[in-house]
Length: 344
Image (tube, rainbow, N blue to C red; front, top):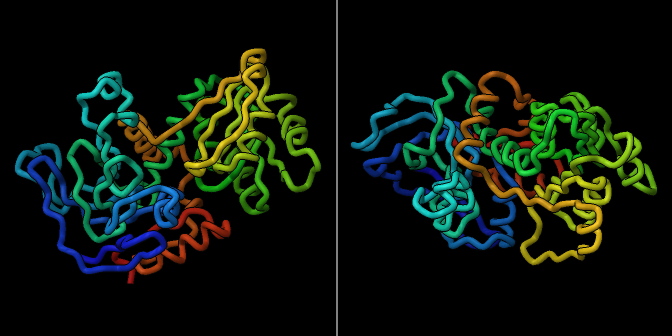
């Protein structure tokens, strides 16, 4: 089979590789679509360490091609979305439902202590516990179940309630999914801050109550708070940079939460005032990956049209074009890039 393989930091090539063989409790899935994520970008550039050679790609969906001898719930021809996080289901974190924090987590093509080959390939093998049936849902839409699930996990981290005000810094693909996830739990108002005009327009189309151009004002914090009617209950950073993390915290009011959702550099450091955390009771919350429950909920929301996903896909590319997608992501060109392995 053909697979786009990370061979070293900054080096990627399409290779002919042996087709995976499903174990007894696994499925072999023919990949229909696989989204390109900032995690892939970081692994390509070496800011997330990865042992090479490795096939990346963890936002995927496809058709079951073969099933292992112990598989009873699925059969060839079933259309499924793939949850890339494989927990051990035995450690303390797994036992309390925090499968994303598993002490022995394995990722299918994503970032984890142990990473196995992912879905930038014609075929990928997957445990039967890591798929959800998608029916007739298009593969491109189903491939967004993983990033949406991460967004749902982020919303749960800050315990958002109906009527809580939210400011989201950054309206890339994940910021736009977060916007919709917060709308689904009743957050209001929701203000989105984004420098790109087209992304601001899309945020408004997706239901943002106000959009702000942070470059159009000398004080973007004041502009966001003015649009929200004051400090917000939840400030969300969806980019991964120290200045925007600080900005998200600055717009958050007393007793609120600042959600660190964007992926920062592993070596990044920032200053926090312990007194402000103490006196204002503003909490920092991280949001890493997704739980098994988050993934199931994400597939359901996509199936029933509660999330506008199709408009996020702006680029459909073949296996050979992955480096170009990374260049576009670095320059904020387009939104979601999706690899279609059988694309001619």
